[in-house]
Image 1 (spheres, rainbow, N blue to C red):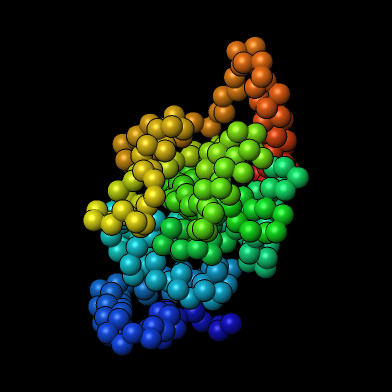
Image 2 (cartoon, rainbow, N blue to C red; image 1 turned 30 degrees about the horizontal axis):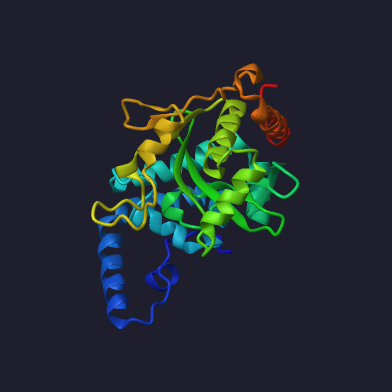
Amino acid sequence: MNDKFLFPSYKQLIPYDKRFLKRVRSFLRFQLYRRWCYSECLQFEDYLNQNPFWQPLFYQNLYRCNTLLEKFCDKRFNKKQRLQGILSNLSLAERILGKSLIQRLFDEDSLLIGKLTDTLSLYLNINQIDPFEGFFSINIKNQNNESIYDASFIFIQPYSILITSVQGPNKLDAQGLVKDTTKQLHGIRPMFMLVYAFQMIAHCLDCELFGIKHKYQAKYRWNDHAKLLFNYDEFWKENKAILNTQDYWVLPLAIEYKSLDDIASKKRSMYRRRYEMLDKLRDEIILFFRGKCDE
C-alpha cells in the first residue's frame, strides 16, 4: 500500500475489454469525467490521506473509486453530492459500526451476524456486487456459502441507513431457490427477511431506515427494464413505508407480530416458528453489534 493515496488511472480503474470500440469509448468517457470531477478527486484523495483507515476499502477494489466519477447510490446526485455522499458514508460508518468491526470486514469481507435456520444465515459484507449501489451489504447465504439474496446499503446524514438495492439469485433455477428458501424461512420471502433484518439493525443502532425510490436507484434506466426486476416503490409500500420530503421511503422499525389467536389453526405452528426465528435473530443482532445497541 502506498503512503499517499492517488486517484487511480484509467488502466487501474477500468477493467480491460477485448472490444476495441468499447475500450475507446470507456477511455474517452473516463478522461471527460476525470477532468469534470478534478476538484472532487483532489478532495477525495485528501480525505483518504487524512483518514488512511479507509484506504484498504479502495485498494482492495480500485473500481470503487469510479463511484465518484459516475454514480453513487442515488441517481440524483451531482458530482459534489456524490463526493459528499461517499465521505459521509465513510465517516458515519466509522461512528455507527466502529473501527474494530470495519477492520474485521476489511480482513474477512463477510461476517456472520446470525443463524436464521440450520441451513441459512445472515451476513454483513463489503459489497462485492456493484459499488455504484454502495460499499456495504447484508445477505442471506446457505450452508454452501452461496448467496441467496443481497441488499446493499449506505449510511446517510444525519444518522440513517439507506437501502439502495435488493437483488435475488442469478441462477437458472432462481424461482425454485427462492421458493425453497421461503419455505425454510417459515413463509417469509427472502427479500422481506432482509428488510426485517434491516429493521432490527437500524433499531439496534438507533438509526432511521430508508429505502431508495425506484427511479433514483443506481441501475434504473427509463428505457431498460432488464436491470430492475421489480418495482422498488411497490416493494417499500408492501413494507409499510411512506415517502418523506427527501423522496426516500421511510421504513418503520417495529415489526408487527400477528396474534396467534387470529391465525388459522393449520398455520399457527408455522407462525410460531417464524416468530421464534425473528426473536432469535434480534438477539443475535444485539450480540453482534454489542456496545452499539441499547439492550
